[in-house]
Image 1 (tube, each protein chain N blue to C red):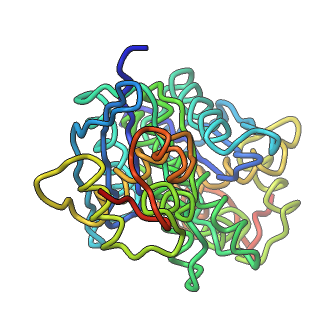
Image 2 (cartoon, chains in turn blue, orange):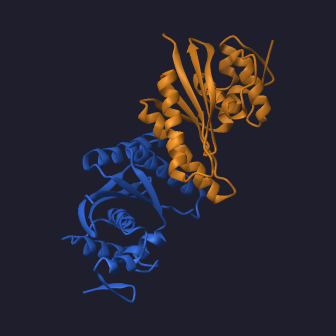
Image 3 (cartoon, rainbow over the protein chains, first blue to last red):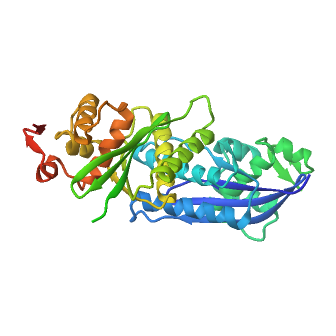
Length: 177
Length: 177
């Protein structure tokens, strides 16, 4: 099987994280990651335009084969829920417009896949992303979440069981060694 | 000033209404209207893809110069708010990707512009859209809302005052004659 590139997206109106990884069989390789930001001083259509154009540019640059995006949850503030929903709708639009399949994973699934349990803190997700991809430095929290979502997809949305099968050593929900 | 085509959008995940009108100075002319529907049996990315492609097709077919979209409100059900937000984000993405400016109006502004008061029922909006555009039959409620949004934009987001200036006879918040 040839290498597959996966684009992971952690959607948000203020900051959308993206991460691109390459899967050679069971081996994962880091390709790129970063953030697309929009200012809350801009009107919503301009912010949606920034987000859509940003993701489209990532797709044009790194040419992923598949994509995965985090499911989002309703916020205590309904207005925030509405804004987050619009950002996620724009992100999915850019992915489908770019011809990509779009898989969806909850934050719980992503954390279970990468850290081994669903209540992991942001810092743990970052640390595991660094380890799994052999990075020399930690990506920003949003980029790390996007990379984690791509990793989750690479392992079929499964947890560390899949990683263990892939040759990683796992004990008590943690990678060891 | 040459004729300007305005695309109005009433966003929704299940049904998104669209309406295209042409503005020759103060004269309004109906061009087209309809609905883009998606099935709740499909996964969200497929529904977003349908909505994005549908609006893109409307833009390619009718080549509007400007667009206007209804602002949406938070629902009592937060999950519905999230879905509606994602539909609206996809709609705005299609509009900005199509190179259109996007104006936003609340349902209150739209109703005030078309019926003359903000508490108008759906049937009143439909009836006024039929009258203002000289239609031979009533469009569906979603298409009528989209046409109403386009009419609101044509009159600069203003109420019946603008219509009166344009030669319509208005009394007590209603068009007469």
